[in-house]
Image (cartoon, rainbow, N blue to C red; front, side, top):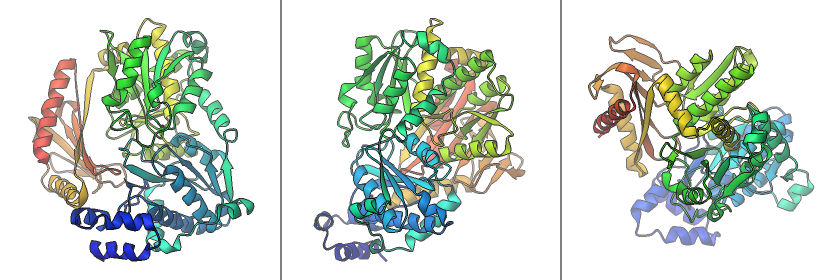
Length: 574
């Protein structure tokens, strides 16, 4: 069916939905917009689905949410008889239509005979992950588009381990989604669902208290915090999202008395009115927080994204200015603090393991190995880190100590199976207090790490390629690089190419060995001197991402080398 036929079909199928019909008819004359909305269906994968809000097969709307939930319900009902009774936990953040999408999901599940546990207000992603395990549910759904711009929303699905669904399960859900028409997805009456015991609303006492109590157990040096916590000053911005209550609560409970919240960004706001993008990776998101930090003399600044799975920080540098740390720098600083402290306390497990994504810095490996731990790589996406945690627990071969992704996701627990901004906030506050007892800042600790292990520089370059043409362009770039990989980049010889789609590592002589990770559309170029470049299409945005990593004994040399490599890679992609 052509995009035009799909458009006309929606006009017919949803003729009783006045708002949708008005939105669609307003598109007449804008053929490119009609094509973009209807040339494909919103993709559903291991990260669920995410897209711009609006009417159309390629947009986030109630029809796509209901249909996705019907397919998910069909998959759950295909499991053993206990699955529907165990039920599905549903959370949502502060985005446009998040409460509506969450309730629609719950009532479609109820219509299919599956119990739904719906939170009474917005909650972070880590609380959803925790709740799935805590309530022994079969699955979870969270309505969020994470750090995307305000016009986006999304739908993420979790399985009984509290992690996002792995590819094989997601594929089976997708089959069932495609087997359903929009009309097949029906909501149960809310009052009837509650009366039948199918819909349960989760209040604050039922999950949140236990979650916070468990997060408190992640404190590495609780005794230190009783005194040092009184001296530390933190400015926090939830960026209008779901982190406001749990992050402030955990900081208070571990002994941080001086927390200053950016009032303009404290409350939920689906328009994210004070910022362009609610992304703690974006320096602009910290503008208001930095102003407040200057006023109160804060030691560090925290910012969490709308679903509070990511956290960014700014700390005072050696000139007293606030320095925004990268995800790799935060991850390595936390890792260093955890390992150094636990070694001194004698609580470091002999079989300890650190897990990071393959696009995250190799500095983490050097730190881990210097403390006698093993460092594992996974594909991008925290579900893969969660999978390693599960493997460790089942085999007993390793004890999980810490996991992170360069995209500002961190975790030191096993009771949550996704990145956790609340967990990370506790660790960052504790590390900052620990540094302050030594007359240092976290910036000083970072420099200490570099002097010990070498100066690692990491840069992520994103090329946005929206629409149908953009998808084709991304495929062409990856195809071209696979068929004609470079022999050298910026004068550095390519020692090997890892093609995770083919599952092979090919060295300079042409010899092939297994790549060592599951299949994925990722190319990784190993270069001379320990440098590397990785290229992959984003799984959640219309972007192709380029990761460039270098290291040297001197900071300036590593930075210059990195920029030269970035320029070479941009030219290669063009």
